[in-house]
Length: 633
Image 1: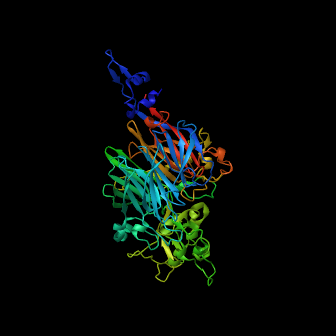
Image 2: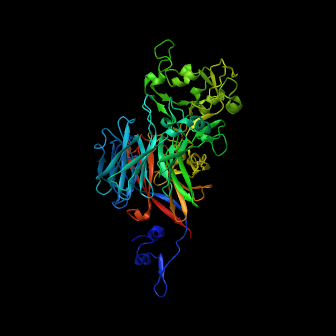
Image 3: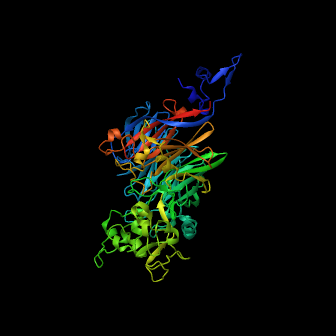
């Protein structure tokens, strides 16, 4: 029998009167007229581990994106390793079992399955073609029979899809990443598919070509448009989509562009591109742990360092009739051709390939200490010096008025580039240096003096990848709230414990990597705990955000009922083994590399409880959590 706690959900008020009477949530007066008692207010929640499905495959994205069909009690889990969709029986959440695997070879050869969405008995799948720069496909299946209802061609590299709340449309984010040598760069787009007749899908494309003529204005506003030779439409890379409650508007994460796009669904038109701005890591409450080699947690402000929010997953919720956007600020660098030796070239002057071949790729990331060195860039040629940067200048300087606190002076980076300071931090070289009114770099000489004949860039600010945070934005892309350094501060605190039994001090494994054992601080120099997944759910009159941390692992829960002043309420990390190599100890390691979170409401759950399903790409597991609601007394 359902418990009284679950019966407090408004969606369950259709349960029979007799059942409610038995539960104690309904009483009757003397004439036997049912009287519904006011349920107690929800005050918070905690997470509990329930069970998991394990593919037995490590590091191959064998359990990535998840969806759930309540009628068939099936979970659908993207298995990128097989280019397929695993179908799980969720009748017993403590022991999900594999029913069968849905393949897409009849739609595209050598295809990659990137995403899944489930609604009203339909299962939608995003299918990436080979090569990835070719148009992909979206396919719709029957959740019960797994029969194909229909498929349509969409843009290049469909990376994520979602049904609108009214079930009329399926929206597909076509990321359109370039080829590894950056010689083919398809346009990013959003496909708007009419699914009212699943056997006769109709598709329209919302593209960005209308913004090609606005490149200068977009860049000036803060949108990152920086791919070599790319138009705005080519440079936009849709990553994730969330939809308003009334199904009229969608917001699209443009991760590498550090922006959101707004989509009018009815007309299938991108109406705006909204720059997200940059996070100031130089102020209290916005700091970060910047080094992986100093053997100590040191979360603090770093003036002159800014974070590009770069959201991966986004979600939306409504408060007092207003829509707000949640972002998981992961960070993501463009790094194409990094495994091609021709791109990096030779360090020997006069030798073929000296300085690298810019036509073979484009890599924007570089360690701070390799960007700033008194001897300039030549010392890194043939190693990690991007040829595009070497063509631009022969060295870089730090503005001593900004970076004097860590030892910078005119022409000298000083102690700023030491490993225990900022030296290990991964940053982008593509922005932050001083430019003139035309956007061209202002050159300096090696003494730090402005000099048109000089060959040094002057960086007034330096930009790192990701915000290491969750943020809330208005519908127009204005920042409402950001968690600052709250995520890292909590992971470093005595209050944080990992493991399903909450018995492993998080601080002992702070900023660990999901693919390695005994890796304390491993990710501090590069995006930290890496917030990846986010979703929202409302229980009673309170709304909560569930934030998945890809590298450190686990789900962090925030009460976002007041969007201007959220609070953290729980954190559960079901990684069980942190010291031994996770690949060789896969059976006991738990869950690694969270990519996705699906909330199952109590009235749709196989056991009548609110559940979460997480897809964990490194451990190849789909984990099930119970959401235990707390009530006012």
